[in-house]
Amino acid sequence: MDAQSRVISLSFPVIGLYKSLLRELDLIWQFTGRDISSTIIPPVLFIVAASHYVQSSFSELLLALGYGTLFVWLYLFSFCLSNQIAGVEEDRINKPNRPLVTGKISLHGALVRWFLSMGLFTFVGWYFGVLEWALICQMVVILHNFGGWDKYWITKNFLIGLGTFAHLAAVWQLITPITPIAWQWLFLIGGIWSTLVAVQDLRDIEGDLAVNRSTFPIAFGETTSRIILSLGFGLLPLIIHFILMMPTVNTVSTLLCDIVLAVFSWLIAARIVLNRSPQEDHHTYMLFTYWYCLVVASAIVVL
Image 1 (cartoon, rainbow, N blue to C red):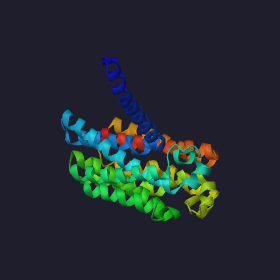
Image 2 (image 1 turned 135 degrees about the vertical axis):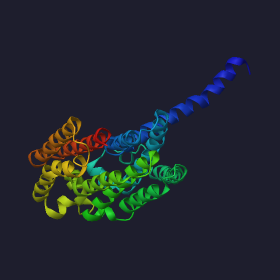
Image 3 (image 1 turned 30 degrees about the vertical axis):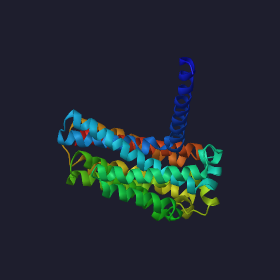
Image 4 (image 1 turned 60 degrees about the vertical axis):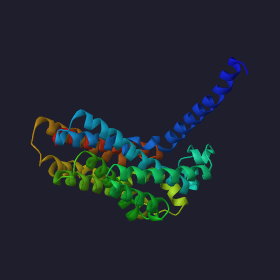
């Protein structure tokens, strides 16, 4: 075999590996891309807040950012995979462009990836010293997607809040032990997600009815749910101010955080009652995830 033939023969495996890698990255994005603003960006910001709080070095911050991003990505990937494995029929109605519905990946292929991600998640949690939080996140994944807890609004919303609490606690702990002020932020943010995440379900009523899932809007009626959720977001700035902002030093930066968060909260409250369609409700939910990013970012300023 001449030199040119050897180069060509060696290039085929490399090209195949490259294409496989691109396909995996594309699948990862299709499974998780919609949830970056709710599950990846806020924990990254919380790592920065913890680093600023204890004045850690730049190298320590970079290391924690790498560890934390891997940790929360594994949580997101394992959650989204199992959620879509268990919800193919629902997704045919609510989200027909998802990879399992379109046939871009088989159910068997998704299951293999899920088991691998869960095993890696456990190892990463142990290796990074946050195994307890990884196990809580995995419990949330299994109960929500395979345990039937997503069928009832109380357990569904509780698990979402618990998962938020656990992965934020994990990334803070990568920097420093959880302090009383950090616990305060964790409990409140987890509680907000448990009580207001029902805004997400306004867009999915048709699909939830099809699979007999009793979400908050289905249990209480769409109109009543919109009123309750709108009131919740309307009062949210007061809760944020008195529980998160007031205990800190009152500065111009703290005031600006209060104002920006209030504007977002009231915008969401207005949209819930005024903009009523699955597409508009999706935009409203995305605004909630942006509010979440902002409230976590405000921890960098006020802590």
